[in-house]
Structures are given as structure tokens and as C-alpha cells.
Length: 243
Image (cartoon, rainbow, N blue to C red; front, side, top):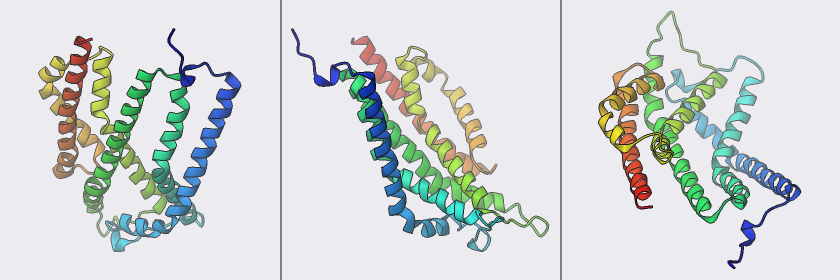
């Protein structure tokens, strides 16, 4: 009879809850430690964000706005730095209830998803955001003077970074649909022209400005990711056929 791995043995509910609490504490401590470690980077990061602003400055319209914006930015930087460790804690908790094959698949999917999200956020921050913000601020004139508050701008930036990170998960979503039998590779190839139109519509909706250049900046990587999704789906279909 095949021996059972300790990781495959059933875990009592109380032990499961204790393990969950431990992992959550570790994750929270990691975020706090990451926030403390990245606090000196807050001012350089703010200066970098303020480059497209008039005179390179933000305003704050309430006594607490500047303080809470700093705290928010510090926590976001800390969460970003500690994210690999937090994901490891989540993985360590979830993998106890999975079979070995399921653990390997989940680990690979999580790792690729993390890389795609970071790539999308970085692409937005370094290429799309500066162009889009400058374009939007160009609508100002002697009647409409841009005076951007720090809290509103941070909400705008983080929302845009998150949107691009999610959009860059396109190959994984396509692969999942193929794996679930909800989509076929031949359909994706046949509907490529429709996909191109939809991608440009999505680029127009997600980019901060209506200029063609920023929309192309968004659409081109999405087109490349769509092709990667077709390749991923093709690999999955071949594996399904080979059993």
C-alpha cells in the first residue's frame, strides 16, 4: 500500500485556523516591516510622481491630507515590497489541502500571474502614466488651472496601475478558459480581427487620455499578450489530447 505523505493527511479544523492566524500575522508583520524599510523612499517617489505636475508640486486641501497620503503611500510601497513573502504565506497555507499535481499547477499559475501583474503595473508607470497625465493637464488654460491634490492623484495612479496589472493577466485568463473547455484555440485564431477591435476599445477606455499615442501604448502589449494566450491555449489543448 502506498504510504501517505504528511502533507496529504487531514488537518483538524482548529489546527487549520491556528495555521491561518499564524500566516496572517506573518503577512501583516511583513507589510509593516516593508513599510518601515521603504519610508525613506516616499519623498523620492512623490517627486517622481510630481514630474508631470505644474511646477512639479501637489497641493493638499485639508490638514490631514498630506499626512494620510504619506501613510497610504508608505503602506502601498511596503505591501509591494513584501508581496512575494505574503504570497508565500498564502501558498504555505493553501498547499496543505492540495494534491501534489495541484500544488505544482497552483504554484506555476501564481508565479506567472505575479510576474504579469508586475509587468503591467511597471509598463503603466513608466510609459503610459507620464504621457497620459501630460496630455490631460494640457487641457488646462487661464480659466481652468490644474491644482491636483495629492490624495486624488494617488487614487488615480494606483487605480490605473491596478487596471494595467489586471489587464496583463490576459494570457492566463485565456488559458483558463481553454482548460475549462469554454474557449477553443481555433476560435481565438478565427476571431483575431474581432479581438483586435475589442483590444483597441479597451485601450481607449483604460488609458488616461484620448490621444492615439497612449492608446497604442496600451493596445500593442495587449495584442502581444493575446498571441501569447493563443500559444498558451494551444499547449493546454495538446496536453489534453495527449492525456
